[in-house]
Image 1 (cartoon, rainbow, N blue to C red):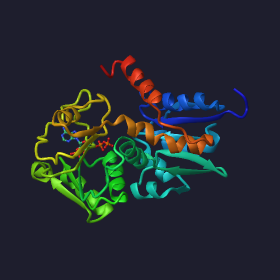
Image 2 (cartoon, helix red, strand yellow):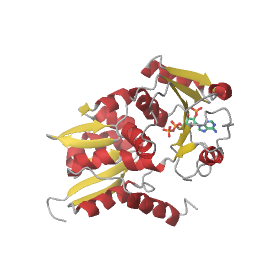
Image 3 (cartoon, protein in one colour):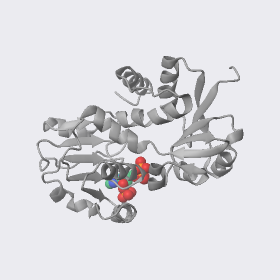
Length: 284
Ligand code: ATR
């Protein structure tokens, strides 16, 4: 490689399953950019020292995935407003030798819905979010930022929903999982952020009959692409958006930051990632 090659990597533990090298590699080739996007597996015990010495790592930037997003947040000298709101960083870069961070998960979630259903947020008074983990934080924040009046959070462990309300304020309404049915009456946006429905996990088995006929149902799980939830929604004639687009769209701002070109989420890229998932036996 030439001396000017810009090296970026996904940092996680484990990280070998990551689709980020495929996504960024596609854009690097498409734009003819002298860059490389690799993988750095960093164990939890090593992440703080790795990030503290990031400027000496040979990388000009990186993505951060589970379980290091909070460590990345702590390690940054400066962060964007979304990262500050979420307490988690998934995108790193260097400025004058200092580590900077952003969180692009919110962008990924919103841009995926915008691309599939441009009017999804219009006059949306309430949304129902299932789950209250790390992914839910990004989803809830994104919905509030987009102007949804109230975000109902149903989670198996109610205290985690309450923690989201404590963070984001009274427009977040935590409810018990068993009260979900009543809350779905007339619901126009339902988002699954739990791991239910993921390959190897139990399905998310809820009755969708109370939802509004114009409801949109979306799942951040993308293995399988059509989760049991999305399949049931389609069977009822409801609009659906699968979770793969969130993965693709969250990658856009980082690529632009590191390589100076805003890349596009194309049908070709989506097909490439689906083919890779199939080749690895993860999708039928
Ligand atoms: P992530 O960062 O991907 O959101 P997480 O923080 O582990 O991952 O959150 C997983 C979410 O799936 C949580 O909302 C979790 O509910 P709890 O907070 O009660 O653990 C939810 N989840 C996982 N398995 C579940 C199950 N069998 N039934 C209901 N909810 C489940």
